[in-house]
Figure: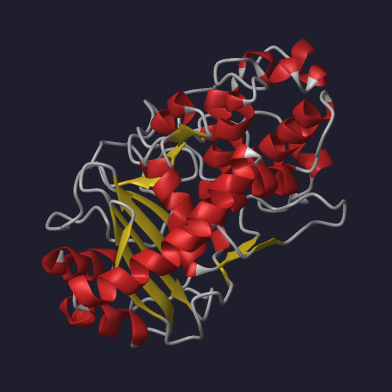
Length: 335
């Protein structure tokens, strides 16, 4: 049997089996306060997983297989895409983007930008307020900062990386669409289903804010990153890439590859995200990573504590009543 088909079958059966077991072994009422906090703020789903075991789940917005748009929480699939390409020998974090986007080779600054700099938000490339947010515009952008000097939270990096992935996939026989490649190669085998992608006019998937996924599926994706690419005792994604994704960078220690890091690192700028994750009395462990979308779409995970938490909302509009610190304090109190 194909390795990934076997893993996919095992993942789907493991979710239902572990859920049934935990319903008896770990009463979910321990998490009642966290569930209530989420549900009262338009919550659609809530799930807590520890070391691969489901401790609690709640679905006030529908069943466990319901898909919800996760907005900019989609960005956490970018390191999984990069790690899959690296595992297939198609990508190195330190290679210049100009090796794939040849036109950049003649530019004095863009020729020096690496894939690592792009994924960490430190490439200096960013859409302006009036720019069309399409591929042609992204590739033609002039750097607004020298690479690796300042973190910029901007969609341009994700548009460019999606094109890099597409071009790399074209060099081999097989699926060349980055979203379908990631889904078939990596997400389906770990049970990250169902998942859907919003696409642009050119057909390219949006890795910036385009995914809709079930809570269980999103949790499985977080678990794979937490385990640094190992699933069912087999490596299916590159360990180095996923390790770098949760470390932050010199430009911004609180930002990884499409993820926010709870580490309180210093920066000259405020982060452009509506979260109190970094407040002085935040209960988040220092290694906690977060994928965040508007409306309180959240995935959190801690490698040291072995925990993955998903909370989804019915809305992707900004919710001023949502507090990451308060929610996490309720969850951690119940662990």
